[in-house]
Length: 227
Image (cartoon, rainbow, N blue to C red):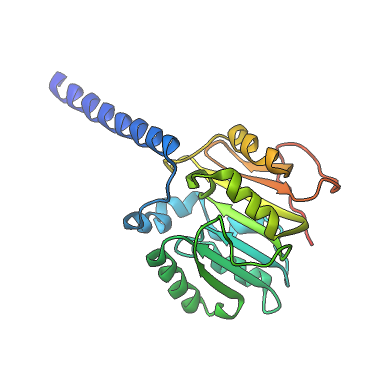
């Protein structure tokens, strides 16, 4: 019995040690999730707390909007964004890894919403979008993996319309996970105004405005700002 207990403790210690070292490595040198782990983005366990419909529903997407899905991955949430903007709107799905982007393209085609989605292979520093052309930018489980966050935020400010919104969402299972307070400390100095937060420490979404003149309500409640 003692041997079994020791083995379990040793195994638990190894797992914890690996998690700590992996997370420290991400914070020292942020980088995109390797494409070999793309299947984890659609793992049933993840989708239990990251239901695509529920995740997108709180973002205030309306028909006709132009939405940027930065770090779209396999398109898990892009499909719902496309359905919400409808035939008169558009979703720009951007990912730096071509193999993952190809999976997103296949998913969008299977969902028959290709007409509303434009795919872009690239990163966050030079978005292929016109200045002041985006109503909402969504950065889901991606922002913490970007090395130069100030540069990325400046580019997001460029493409967002005055009064446009930025939604940044993080989840604890992501090795690059950052606390809500840390995320705000990065985003607000770039010229964004905090508009609210939903979720929990395990999985949260923060909304920011690209216009200091907008009236917002501070607090922990979900903030949905329609167009």
